[in-house]
Amino acid sequence: MKKIRTALIDDNPHAIQILRDDLARMFPEVEIVGEADGVVQGAKLLRNTQPDLLLLDIQMGDGTGFDLLEIVPDLKFQLIFTTAHDEHAIRAFRFAAVDYLLKPIDPDELRRAVERARKMLAGSPNTQAQVPVLREHFQKETPKTIALHTAEKIQIARLSDILRLEADGNYTEVHFTNGHKLLLTKTLKDFSIILEETGFLRAHQSHLVNFEHIREFIKTDGGYIVMADGAKVPVAVRKRAEVVERLGG
Image (cartoon, rainbow, N blue to C red; front, side, top):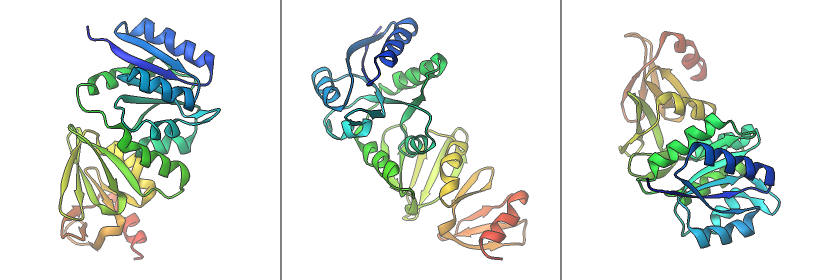
């Protein structure tokens, strides 16, 4: 069995010990190649060990987890953040498509996160592409970008460039204002949780639209939205009143 070379970075020795013990118990293939307690030591550790997987605390004595990621731009690894409960941090992780665990860490959640990371190790990790999104969402109240995972890559997109999202089974197809499409490895429900607070509307079970790009709402034929590109999106009966109200009707 191929070893998963893993680094642990956290300024709490007790948290490190718990992670080490739980990983050893659940994942014999996980090999801890090093531990660090902050940004400076963490950067040295990552450069020296080049791990496959990093479990990283978000708030440490000498900086944050994404401070660390910005100073090791040449490294590639799967990333799992560990953090105390913080809604603002969780929103940032979701927009950046970064996995996270809430402290105190539940062993079952740890198991699921490591299993997801193991499946993705066969691909091409691109953690660095997600760092600017993380920093933006920690510093600003209004999100402007999102990291989108396909089977082959992570693409950073501006929310204003997204026209609408459409369910495709357990996948989601994103339609952009320039006509491009992208098939993502998350469900539409996952994106609804992230985007509905930023001006997007779940108009229908299978459709999430960017309100910024709605051209008109047609009340006949069951009711449907016409998007800026001419696409017609059905509106669920329970959503009609909300659409009319938000359009100023």
